[in-house]
Picture (cartoon, rainbow, N blue to C red):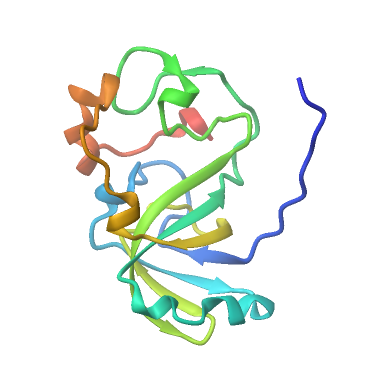
Length: 162
């Protein structure tokens, strides 16, 4: 194992209607239409220049309520156990999350978002624009999610990953 460590500083905090992990949507598709805000710390405002030209952005964030990691998990969309790297479960060696959300409006350092699936107060580590020419893939396989992935719109979280 490597003893290399990093220090990450949040660039902002997301505000969402989810105060508790119980019954949250488990992915942005399950949060369709849910609004939230990202308040970017003022010292990073210059980094937002031209972001308002994009309809969708990736938010990279910290699962700040996760207290342990598991290398195998039973995800919300299956009853079988899978390696954590074959899931999007939060109990990861580095509890980092990724969500693609719609950017509705940007006013100064406040980004109004839609399809937010994060807990209120989640620290945001980075923002990247979603670019179909870069991000869309062909010949995609989705492994074990082939049989259950369509349930993401209605499935909600429980306390198993808190």
